[in-house]
Image 1 (cartoon, protein in one colour):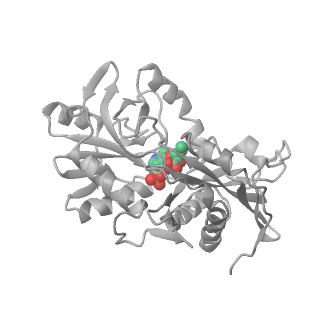
Image 2 (cartoon, rainbow, N blue to C red):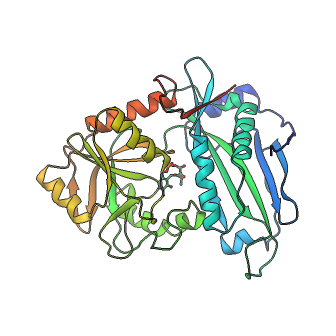
Image 3 (cartoon, rainbow, N blue to C red):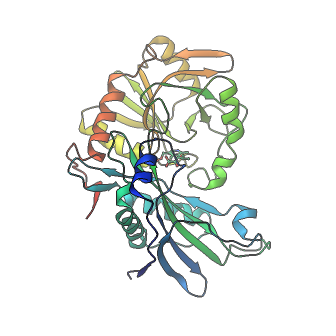
Length: 360
Ligand code: PLP
Ligand code: COI
């Protein structure tokens, strides 16, 4: 079944104003002219698919999402290629993950084709908003909220709204490829067995703000999460997954159900193998991280995610102690993988895996 979208054309922001906004890189503060909304109700299923002017959503104060946090989201990017065309990176993987999050949060499944069509329509309508500067892109934020106006909490909401908004983005971490410092959170945890750690739901993020503040107080840029049961195994970082590099061998924490199965993580496991780096998914303990850093066996650590791409980790702090990884500078494997992944995303390197979806 294909969903018919109705288009309500927005007034375009004047070119000069848009160019001014595109020249000031930030993350998530500026939005394009349009957005997409699709409604769902128990009676009608998905309906009223609209490409419409970007603007506020009017919701009753009793709307369920405000009270019980039934919300999921995705994050992916559209890239400007050297010939001026635009491509979205692995949107089918985001569509599949949205539906996995949806299943966990007792929300309706969105047909993958509707997700892809929504992105295509929005990016095509707002194509002038896709930056052409090196390292910049158009960040796409699909999300779904429970919209039944009721404080009753007896069963899942009987109405939902799926929305896609788009925001031109510069580098997520202002310093680009400069290494970040991270804080191992021992007081708080992010996700436990049987919980929502593998779903991309808003509540997972709200619960981590206090630890982010703690990390900042410790002079660190990001939080690293340990498993909730033993407080021993490394799960992931605040908004990204992690890779540990031993010479030319890569290890990333295995998917235990308490961390997000990042699409960048998955892409890098494939690219590492393409480039001849052995890569595996294993459990890594915080003690091992410290010991291998001290012995020098661990040569690089980096984080990866859509918004922050690949970011080297220069040092980490656990309690009062700080460890510097290698010489604290970005390592060769990190930089090689970064170049390869960004090369594919920006159309400068061959996409052997069918990851790049071109917009006409
Ligand atoms: N882990 C968390 C908690 C995230 O928020 C993200 C970002 O989306 C990731 C990992 C990386 O996922 P992806 O590579 O799909 O962006
Ligand atoms: C993304 O990388 O898409 C994310 O979701 C991170 C976001 C929390 C800023």
